[in-house]
Structures are given as structure tokens and as C-alpha cells.
Image (cartoon, rainbow over all chains, first blue to last red):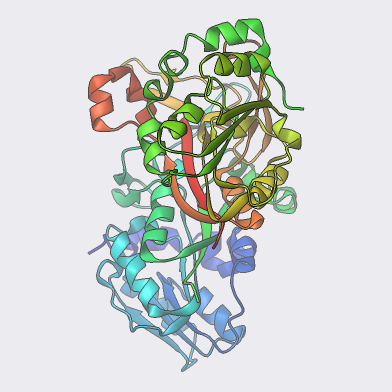
Length: 244
Length: 244
């Protein structure tokens, strides 16, 4: 089972303060880019892998999705998500994505936000998602970028002029990285971008679009603190499709 | 026109000392991985974008290619390439890849080794390559990795224990990078991996495989100096295909 850090009380309380926790999709600066990569969800069945507070599940219902299944390993997250809707077309279910099973040909869209970098059994999960999609179905996700996950000492190097440099090393060494983010010992899986892409292709997907996300000029003007995100990508967004 | 640094005498003399210049494909550690991504070339017409000394052109002829066209902007490189073969099925031609035109449906394989990071008009070149391929034809290339091209100060940071860190900054700022490599003022184009991939897809290609290249365990054992290549990818290898 993936480490369930989101049920750690200190982690959960820290995470709850994030802008993306308080303000949902509008608090996530990558959301406009990710949203633009989504297919029309009118009448669609949608599954969200790592649904957290359920912001995306509620959003796609507002966009006309027929049924939405939100999966998460964290009871705390699911409990919060359930408290925020009474919509009978949204189901929240506790699942360990390391061992997920989904019905075949059930969904038009599989979605995942900043979750897949926690998963060890990624080839198995991609195969599960592929078979759960209808022909022509989409798989759209974000994950932490390997430039962000790879460093043995992930923190900015700042020179006398305040210029920021990100310390890349160990890129070819895929696997566990232990970091400190609201709690000690948060375990992530560092994988090369090439590995994500080749695993998707091996599962049968066609790659439609990749975004090594950075803030737009408008976002930088509105939130100058985002400028460090122009120095190195913290996350990537990817759209893949099951062939018709 | 792309800067023609390869015709700079100091650059040419420095480049000539490289293991990959002296020993050709066997002197390029990424060659086994790149070679494994190539389709069968038996009876194929092949075009090589940035052929240099022509090592690849001669190799695919040995593998049974029917005709090979090697293109390069450098007269010095082409002159050397011409001196190394009398095979009438290999043609070397001086071309500026910024303004390349190729006949439609003429090739089964387009290949390029460590050349595309010099090109400004990459969307146009990808469109040219796409239309020059037969349906099902392959485009296989290597280029410098954006992690390698992005730094404002591209050199290792080495700590007291000798650990090497690569200084990433400015990743979102695509465009010109000026470096010093055998000559002052070598101009490269920094582009995100996402940009290469999305431009290929926009041109009509399907992405088949991506390799953010690093040395194998066997290569590391034979050439310990390659170990720094495990810290960050210097190049990527990509295989794309024109749909049938």
C-alpha cells in the first residue's frame, strides 16, 4: 500500500492551509492549463484517482458529467469530500491505487491530480486505467515533474543577487525519494518523464499533449511569488487517449 | 540560417578530437540505445539531418538501405564525409535545415543526431520531415536535453565530497543559449521536452518512444567517466512515426 501520509494529522493540518485546499481548483495555478486539456464531459462517466477534497469531482458534475467516482486512500480527505456534497451522482470510495481494479470500458475520462508520483505500481495502474476507458476515452493527469522530484537535497540555491537555481542530481536513479513536506518522511517515487510516457504507450495509450507547467505572464503579474516556477517545472500535465 | 559553428576552424579542430568523431557511432555512448529505436532499413530510402562525418549514412547502407541522403550545413563536415566513401548510393548535400525542402513521401526513415537543438524553425522542419515520409515512416532523433541546455551557467557544482549537481534555472524561458564549446559563442536553442513532443504531434506524428538517455551499468563499468551522465540527462532520444 502507498504510504498514507494524508491521514497523518500534522500533514493533514498543513495541507489544509494550502491555497489549493482552501480555494480548490481556483487556488491551483496549473488548473487553467489542465482544464484546457480536458475533453467535453457532458454525459460522461468520470473517475478521479486521488480525489482529495473532491474539488474536481464536483467541478465535472457542474460541467455535465453523468456520474463521477472519486477515489482516495485517505479517510480524512474522503470524509472532507463527502461533507462538501450531497450529489447522489458523485461517489467517493476508499481505494489503494497500488491495487486498484476498475470495470472494463466504464469511463470516458480518467483524471488524476498530483497523485501518481506516490505510486509504485504505475505500470499496473496504467493498464487498469486503459482497460477501464471506453475507446476514444481520455486520461488526463498532473504529477510532480522529475526535475522537482530528483534532487537528493531539494531546495533552491540562492546567490548573492537572489537568483535561484534548482539542484538536479541522480536523475537516472528512479525510485524512492524521502522529503519533508508538512511531515517528516514523505515518500515519493521519482520517475523520468520518459518512463511515464513509455509506460503509457506500453499500456496502449496515444500521447496527445504534454505540458511542463509554468505560470503565464498574467499569473506572474498577479502572483509574483510564482516566479520561481519559471526556473524549473514543479509538475507536468499530460493528456493521453485510448485509440478508437 | 543557423549559425555554422562547425565551419569555425577552432571548433572543427576541437570537435575532430571527440571520441564520437574519431570512432564514429561506436564512440557515441548513446548509439546502442538510438540504434535499438531504428526500424529495419533494408531497401529503405533514408535522410540524415545534420550528417556530420557521415557515420550514420554509411552504417545504414551497410544495414541494407537503398539510398541515403546526408544533409549538413558545414562544408568541412561534408568534405570529410565525402572523403570517407565512394558509395554512389550515398549523397551528401549542403543544406540549411532552417529552410529545408524535401520531396513528398520519399523516405522511410528520417534521422538526426544532436542537431535539432541548433534549429530555430523547428515547427517548419518537423512539417517538412512529416510530408517527406512515407505513411508508416519513422523519424528517430537525438537532441540535447533541456535540462542540459537551460542553465545560464552550465557547469557542475561540486561539493567537498565530489558530488556533482547540475544547476537548472530559466527552464520556462525557451530560446537562445550561448555557450562555449571548442569556440566562443556557440548558439543553441533551449526548448522544453514538452515543446518537442507537442510540435511533433502538431505536425501529425505519433510518439513511439522517448529515452532521456543515461549510461548502462556495463557502460559505467567500462567508462567510469560516464558516471556524471547519471546525474542529469545530457540528451534525449525520440522515436516518432507518421501514421499509416
